Image (cartoon, rainbow, N blue to C red; front, side, top):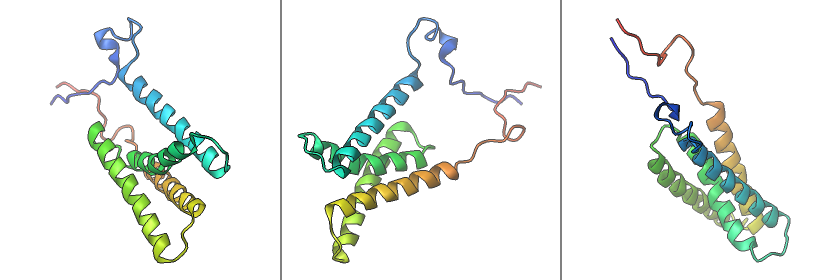
Length: 146
């Protein structure tokens, strides 16, 4: 029996030899850029700094932090499906936090940001801690020929 193996190495078609970046490098670059924008938004929002970028970057923090955590948890989905589901989940988490804080008469801007960031950290940590890695010897993807 022969199993089909999916090589993520792009050196087969010569792109890596030509000096062009691999496809995964662009995703890592965009993820790093988004994480740095969210971090700057957190510094501006929690530090109570006056800047014209404070509002837009705080909005990106409030949507990007839960969306990023949910995207980590949904690593098995196709890329576009993961983007749509994580953005929808991030918006839903923001709405649920706001609704819960309003219902308990505990609304504050800083408290809402702390709650959203705390829940995002919890979701991301649980997703990373419960991620299953294939063990060598079981479920190996090496091709075998009879």
